[in-house]
Amino acid sequence: MVADYNQPMQSLWNNADAGRCDNELALRAYGSRLLGGDPSLVLHGGGNTSIKLDENGETVLYVKGTGSNLATVDERAFTPLRVDGVSTLLALPELDNARMMRELDACLKRRPAPRPSIETLLHAGLPYRCVEHTHADAVLAAMNVENMTAVHAEVYGERAPLVPYHHSGHALARACMQVFDTQRTGNTIGLILAFHGVVAFGDSVHASYENMIELVTRAEHYLQARGAWRIPRIPEAEASPIAPDPAVLENVVDAIRATASAPLVLHIDGSPQSLAFTRRADLADITRHGPATPQHAVYTRRVPMIGRKVTTVRDYAARYRHYLDTHLGQRASALMDAAPRIVLDADFGVCAFGASARDAHIAAEMFAHDIAIMTRASAHGHYCSAPPGAIAQAEFEYGGFAAKLARNNE
Ligand SMILES: [Zn+2]
Image (tube, rainbow, N blue to C red; front, side, top):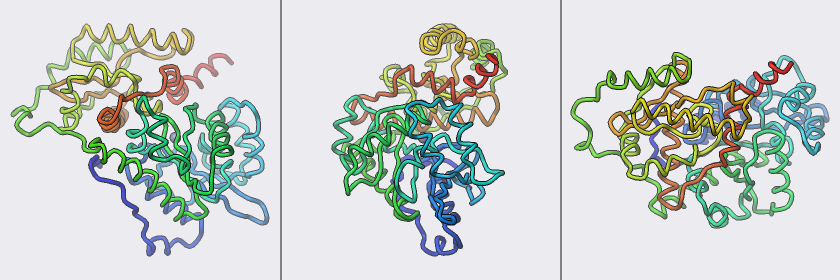
């Protein structure tokens, strides 16, 4: 689906469709599909939702499992867990994610069940029947600026208190609960997660869904009021009459594949929005901070390469290796390559690389969302991203390298 970045958010709730759901979990799945179907809210397996149901006197948390797409979920995509057991894990002062996943397995109410979401503890801790979590572009575009605290106070205040950035899992759930316990008022309907996204909650699927729409709409109104909403496209007159010949990219593509030691696939996004972005005079400055949320770096890396010179690949890889070594240490860094996944070029637009055609397409799509967020954020402030160390940790863990290092250590 081609996202229309200039379209504002609307509630898609339909009472007739909701009425066709014959149980609460089916209704939970319906509300989840409404969120998942909008790429400005969640991308590729991102985002999760939950409902707490009473089963014979016991509260069971149904949270969307990993590996399913929110846009197409049904009841089977939700993992049933005993809330009491999950709450015990949340109460621990520290818990690494690998152990958390093993402990969560022991909290399963029934098997087989999908692997629980990494954010299960957050869903369990919030005292509402329904919880929704997305990575809404508009919220990131409003918040990812140097004066985030002031913008947050103006847009949300106590309606959705601000949670500082923490790695997903136990640490983030603990931080959310700390903020919730100390800052929630009767007016609170969610939480804003710095450099990550937004959480909304409510006592019914419908209320919780509408709360998510409200939080996203507040960010959109803020951006619109500052002339920071519309994403520029190149005027037709500036588009070259003949598409540039991809053959001129051959040398740089070879250099990137050699640096990655992998047969990476190239996907070119030469849309008017991508071309407008890659022709910005401040391109190097705006893209040096990192993606809108660290998770994107698994596909896009922390920063893109600018221009298509072969020598730039060498410079990029040296700088990237230094970043990985600094934040992850050399043993972890050695498991990863230092080649770019996104190359920005004024003639071609966004050139995205991935291990497969699908991965290259995902990288391009994630970067298209980063373009929307960076463009809007810099139209009302100075764009910024999570600290480099947090982004390196996300690349390492979500990219599967942490599990690989653990296997090597066995
Ligand atoms: Zn998330």
